[in-house]
Length: 318
Length: 308
Image 1: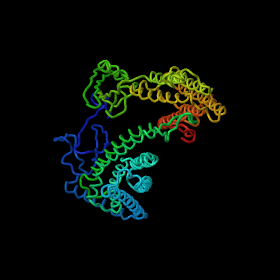
Image 2: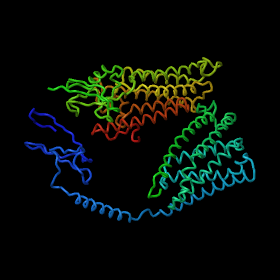
Image 3: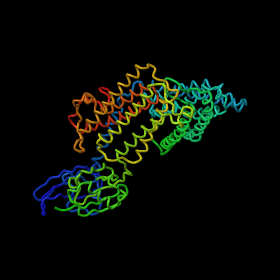
Image 4: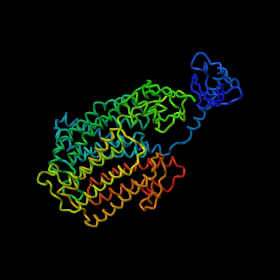
């Protein structure tokens, strides 16, 4: 503050540490002999004393016009709380979204269908391999149609996130759907030679196990039921399965690179009107790097999510 | 009147780095930077970020100590910006690279297209034209850097130059490779396409140059204050009626014309990336203009008239 003191005009300032936060703009009134500064508490509650330090500065005193005893202060606080609770009760009685049940029904159906699809895949693969003793090599031949169906349907997940039907973020959904469908339709689907490789079995198996837990969990959470063991499984089984799935996809790409180089599929050579060369095998190598980075980043994200859901006890359910 | 005392603390550790006694109240931050530099020779003034608040903005050189909200003992915070390099130096390096790299491909150095094709020349006249245009563009940029541009900041961090050079030089090599390739295919619509592209190229280059000259005239006497640019008698500057950053508009136009001239996908990709980057810069500049000047013309858009 600017003032005319014994030494002439000067700028004065001082600092006080109050016990608890105060409103930032104090009211200053200058009189002939003194400067009055009124400071307001940020939150209206009882303070044991005015300042952080034990001794109160002599020039600092509470405004006795507004003085409330400790008990009075508590009563005032209780009254305010009750008002707030009443307000909230009235607000929650306002009718919500009329389509809510329709939306929930659709989501439950979607998750159910996906769950059934992937269970079929999983059971089929398990039976065929372990019980019937059929080889790895014809996995694609028997399973592909169902997998095409389930993964094509998975585009709906992007739509759900996009239009806000589901609270989960858009980008991870896009990355997962496009990542998987790239492997399925482009790398495996268009190359006959890749379809009879054993890595296909592992890719399909890992994908289906993860989904076996993910879809039922979503289905139940739509209805509002939480089955604790399922929650635990959904947020734990990805720890071994997700990296393994990524590894299987990487092996698949590495095996496909020489085939794309040889056949020149999806590649463009000179001369052409666009004056550019596209080597699909080179793009696949870049994709491989992106895949490792993506798995790494997503792993951290899923781990954080796990801590949120399985961590401290929550009264409300996600 | 009393002299000030200035103490400078590290912005992170809050350790006292120096204590300056008997500082003149009308000392500028520039002078304080010089004094700090004497004590710490490796932190030259361009590298020093001096602030009032550890998380705040850096103070400008022209600020005067007694006009700052400090008491007679001022506490300032220092942050090391890392090794700096002058803007002029950066631009010279950035633009000379593509110029000479293109020539490596145009003259078909042996290591580029193999020994059989070494030092041959293309049967297509458009390839020669493309070389002339590309070189003209970068020579023009070099001339502007030396004689025309007036930079508001003196320096930028050193790691920027690696990033920028990689980008400009890399793309120059990539697009030069395809344009000068023995198997290059000239544009589908032949002479009509090429002539149209050349005219558009020349117009955009002239426009871009006019805008740079107009902007540089705003800061004729070395002042660093910002002023609103207005259209002049030069018809190319009339784009200022519609756009805040016509230099970027013309630049994108130049690259679009080059894409049409060469009909080369890598050039198209480079044009797209340029467009995206310049739109970001233009929007930024536009927002700064709007914030600083209350009477800024409302018809103007950042980079494309009426649209963007």
